[in-house]
Amino acid sequence: MERDLERYYTDFEPPPVAPTFYPTEEDFADPILYVAKIKSSAEKYGLVKIIPPKSFRPPFCIDPEKFEFTPRVQRLNEIDALFRLRIIFINKLVKFWQIHGQHFRIPWAENKYIDLYRLQKLVAENGGLRKVSETRRWSHIAKCLGFKSTAGPSLKYHYTKWIQPFELHLSDCNDDTGPSTSEDTKDECKNVPQTRRQSRMMAGLEKRRIKPIPSLDKSSLQDKSDHRTPIELVICAKCGHGDDEARLLLCETCDNSLHIYCANPPLMEVPKGEWRCHTCVTNAVKSVSTDFGFVDSQQIFNLNTFGDWANTFKQQYFKEIPTDVPREKVEAEFWRNVVDIDSVVQVKYGADLISSKVGSGFPRREDSLNGIDFKEKQYYVNHPWNLNNLPKLKESVLCHMHTDISGMMVPWVYVGMCFSTFCWHVEDHWTYSINYNHWGERKIWYGIPGDEAEHFDQVMRDSFPELFADQNDLLHHMTTALNPRFLIDKGVPVYSCHQNAGEFVVTFPRAYHAGYNEGLNFAEAVNFAPPDWLRMGRQCLENYASVQRNCVFSHEELLMKMVGYAKKMSISMCLATLEELSWIVSKETEFRKKII
Image (cartoon, rainbow, N blue to C red; front, side, top):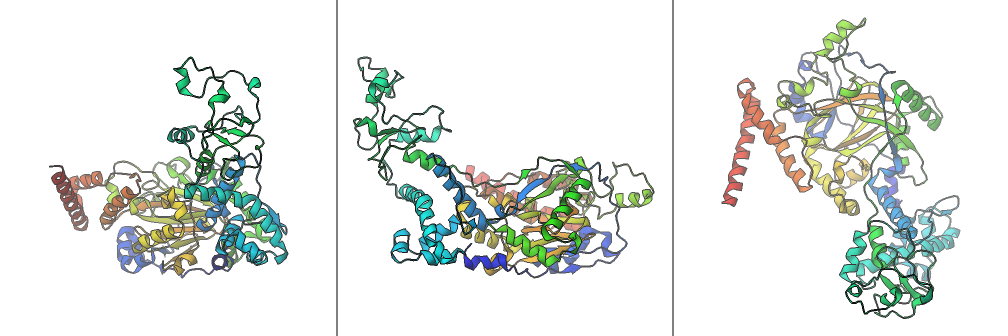
């Protein structure tokens, strides 16, 4: 990794901590009113921690043996935006050599992998291959990559063998200096999705050994007097001649033909195995996916088996009892692993588990409330801070939704382990969110104020344009992490929350947030929307339209339902609804004028 960026990860400096709020018993009676009360002093941090009164101790209502789930597998060095550029580069390099019939593996030097992405960047920054060689800068590049100066010749060898041909091809694509092909041929290259099984290499074949096959020239189907053999119908796409058949190549994918000396760059001899034209190689490399995500584990766990697995992992990793590992050490190791090319750390995360299917940590009306703690469960069934109730409280506009939306109105539960992570994202429709840690080790949060969201978006796009080229809505996928200190140095304020068991974390509208778990824990989260959210919800629709993202629910339909309950709503909710209705009417009037 570049030295100016490496410091963010190898010597991680935590961002400042957001404030913690301690509601009184009276304040705690109404979650919506309490959040409104602290909003003016809390919203500027993006997220805050709320420690409930000591009397709030809801029972955990899940049977560990019966709670079964399939966690997601997370490989730490694939989530960070800085490191993902390396992965995409390597994947394209692998694809390039694969279609050239060569098996590519990341080379080693001094018993560690060579960072080919960084090697390519360093050579470019030092003037290119020729200048680096002429000025004898290979030893300098070796030191920049963390090798001894004696590794310079080895780095030069691997650069010229693996990277230089790939770069030459890309430069040909960018300069449009590749071999000329007809538009029909280009379209055909794009439309053929995969390689044919039969070899189509024609170089070196004699006419007498060619079996009759359908003509490649469509015009010959109309001219039955044309008795030329198939090889005689094949001509070089560059020089236009069909002679010198021993050196005439036929593309494995699109049937485009080219002499080896007409190729760019020219080939010294006929390649062994399959060959593809310049256009098909380009299309294949461009087709390498930049879409990253987490895959499901092949194993089903319950809470007990997952707990054993998670605690064993942490103990073996740190060589200490899980609960004895210093918190600072976990954070430092998390960020170090994120950008370690040699890291093989994979963790599992039971994320976004629908409580209506797997169960909620809070007692619910539909659950069996038997047991010695029956009265306690009965009390918390109707408690306003029970996340099954909070979205539908009277002062949450979501109470007017007649459909339970999973994750927004129906809580999701999360079973975390050491290093399991949730990447930068905002809540659907920019609503508020609330998370409760039922039990276990800390959950570390990083948050960005909502009014800095556009700044964050711009920093991400400016810093990693390659990632957004094919995924304009990348930040909606919840698969991209980025070091908080990198963002702070770019002028984006970031704050942290350290959520222990029995504590709430609230995020405010359009506040980006991310984080990770220090160890085994069980959390639950849901969304809510006080009247002041309506304006943000409307602005969110415009943002969704700009990245072609579908809405989770209809904002206008929600407003119409609220109008039907106007007589039962509070004055503040009525005023917020009226403001939104006025905006909708003005926009509708504007649209109709354009039609007329």
